[in-house]
Image (cartoon, rainbow, N blue to C red):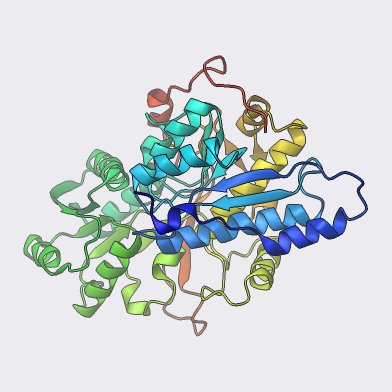
Length: 420
């Protein structure tokens, strides 16, 4: 049965108005380019899904304001993927066969992203996985049409694990969300930790949708590890952080969360923001373009509760902007031509507002980029300035070399040709 949210279609009205003003003098308007936003509006990652969409919409609005892409207005269709792989498959089928989308963008759940990408590959529609970070997305589940824009669990573990062992100790406990991202992120952490001399004393599985962590935290206290590596995300992570804070367990152990998405912690009490965690971007980085980027976000979303952009918004924005720039460079919406442009994508650090140049790995279709480690910024009087950046690692230092051996991209001959 189709959900109420399944048929919901949204448009970027401000962008459309700007485009109409620019093209008012044209005798014949070109057919619009329709892009499908495949992000969650409900389920575990609803908040991150909303932030992801805002990033996509700002990039599209900026392009429409200067005439669209190849003279075509960009319109969007959004259908809620509900943090459910089966819904993700249905959404992708509907967008391609009924909504006539040329490209699809969006994901937070790796299980949902994998489901969407299988449908996308069947039809040849280019799909950008913006924010899911299981190593399998650019490994065994890679596809010729899919491009992955977030750092993955292996990248973040590379940045954090060795330092945590030397700083905090060798007895480790793993807390793992019981689905594909949690399993694969935890597996990557385990392998790296053990290779550097750690001992995994236990792994506790956390079912998706967990809100009461009392039994889990009792087990943690009984095991008494030196380090807790948590691969828990979305609303589950919010609940975990709240209850750890209530029990004053945040400072008792060394907590590592491979990646901390901004929508999952924004507005939480600082005592709940314990541990060390990874991110791909922060709005207080002292880099060219960051201040302007924040101002553009605030101008476009003056009523949004999250007053400053975070990593999820950033990934959604840059994936969309890079796609539209690739279409412009290719001079066509032909999927094979756009894929070839994306495969050789390289963005200077100063343009992308990171410390290192970012580039697409043509063998895995994962964006290689700077990874940052952060912790709570307890000394700040600015309630929005929640992170203190501890370090940054270049793409080469955190590369997931295993992905290249497990990824087997389909050939162009086996990828349907699509031009919409």
